Image (cartoon, rainbow, N blue to C red; front, top):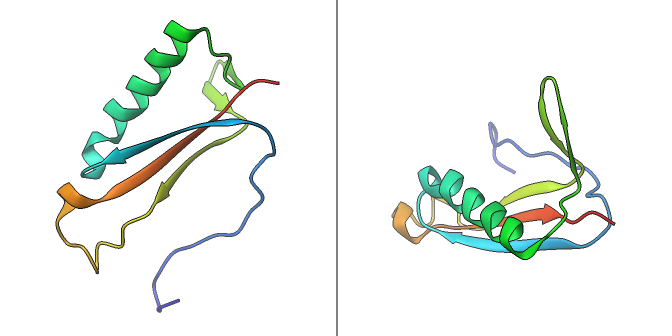
Length: 88
């Protein structure tokens, strides 16, 4: 790891996840997320999340940035995997 690079280690909750890959700049992630959630609503998917007064809480939801912008500066070529945990 280079000085100043951010990372963390943690354990991802076990279970089944839906995975979608977003191709493009990060400013498209909100629309990609909405598309997955809309698909889930149409298909009757039950997500492992709960709603509370302070917002929505997911037991497992990840964004995995597969492209290093230092290697690929063209944001239109970036790939990000989105993972959403399914309810048991």
